[in-house]
Length: 415
Image (cartoon, rainbow, N blue to C red; front, side):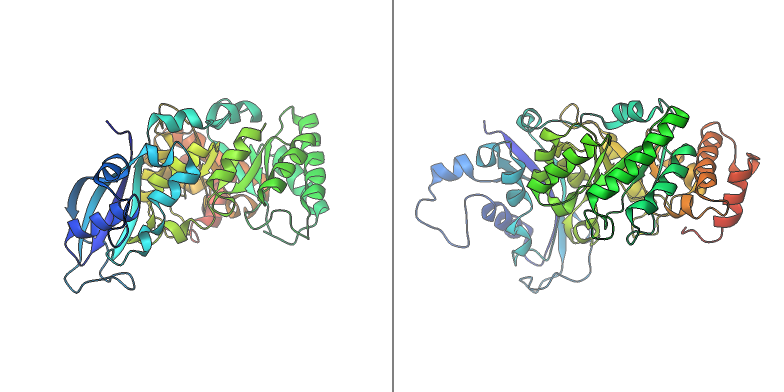
C-alpha cells in the first residue's frame, strides 16, 4: 500500500467538481493537459495522486480568480488528495512544489486554498524538532511559569547601535522576558548586525549583573543562507541567546538548514503571511502553514493577536494557537507568539480564548507607549495577567501601572 502525504484543499470551480479536482491531482503528480508517452497505467498506479474525498461546501468567494474556466455557477468543496511519499521523499524542498506549486495557476480552479496537511511519519524522522520551544525558552529567561512578556525595538528602523543600549537596559531591568528586532530591520545600514549585537549584548550583560536574569533578545539574522549561518554564529559568540528569521523571506528549507546548525532558539516571524493566507479563495491557510514551519524546527511562531490591528479575527487567532499547540507527528513543540496591538487589556480575551499562559506576548506600543514609560508598560501587562489568571477583573486589580494603561489605551485599541 502506498504511503501518502494528504493535502486538504478548499477548491472553488465553475466546472464539475470532479473535473477540477482531477486536474489538480493529475497536474501535481504524473499528468499534464494531454496524454503523453510513458504515462502508463503502471506508472500512474505507483506515482499518481489519488482523490480521497470531496465534500461540497458553500463557496467562500463571490467572484472567481482571474482566468478561471467555465461559465457555470461557483461551486466549492473541501478536497483531500493523497500524494505518494515516493514522489517526494520526506523533503520540504520536494513537497512544497507538489502541494503548493503550479496548481494555483490551473484554469479549472476559480479559487484554491491549501488548508491542511497530513504528513507521513518519515517527515518526523527526517527533520529536527525545535530544541527549546516552551520549556527551553522558559529556562533561558528564568521564567518557569506565567506568561512570557516581550516587546519590539521601536522605531522600526533608523536607530543607531548606541540607541539600543538604554532601551534594552530599561526593558531588562523592568522584567521583560524577551526583546526582538523588527522584521524590517536585519543587517541594515543604520545599525549593522555586528555593531547592534555588540551594543545589545553589552546592555544584556549589565541587566544580568544587576538582576541575575538575562532577557532573551532575538536578533534578526534573515539573509541569504550562507550569511544567515554566519550571522547566527556572530550572535552566539557574543553571548546572544536567540535568533530571528523572516520565515517567508528565507524559506522553510533554509530554516531547516539553520535548525541543524543552531545552538539557540529560532524565533520565526511570518511577515508576508497576508499574501498567503488573507484571501478566502487563494493561498495557504495557517493550519497547513504552521505544520511546515514547525517541521522546519522553529521554536517560536507568530500567531496573530486578539483584538488585532490586522485583518485576523479572534476566532482565527484562537484556532491558530490551538493548531500550534497540537502535537505534530508526536512532537515538534512550539511556543505561540501573540503580537499586533497587544497590551494589558488583551490579557482577559487571550487567556479566555487559549486557556493557557504558555504564550509569548509581544507588545510594542503596549509597552513602549505606556504613559509612564516602557518599564511601566511591562509591569502593567504582568499585573494584567496575574489578575486574569487569578480570576480578578482588571478594573478591580488596583495596581497603578495597570490602571494607567487601562485609562490611556482603553479608547484607542482595536476591537
